[in-house]
Image (cartoon, rainbow, N blue to C red):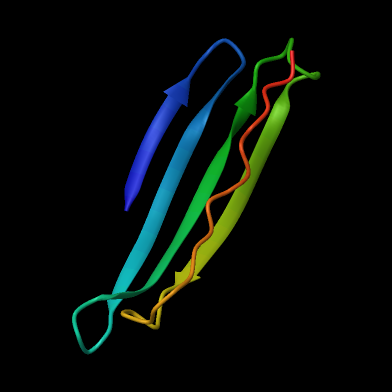
Length: 81
């Protein structure tokens, strides 16, 4: 678990990150899960001030290690100017 306080010209609060990594029988990463939350207070001049909070939960499962895959090169990128 990681807890990090922050303060800038727009807000102050706390960001928290909690996670877990699960290994399969072959000791390879099988699952990564974490929760990120952010809560604090906006400064009075930013959107009227006030409290805010958000939470996101991410889970990624990995499997089929060693399975052959076919990958094609992407088309060339054209930079728009």
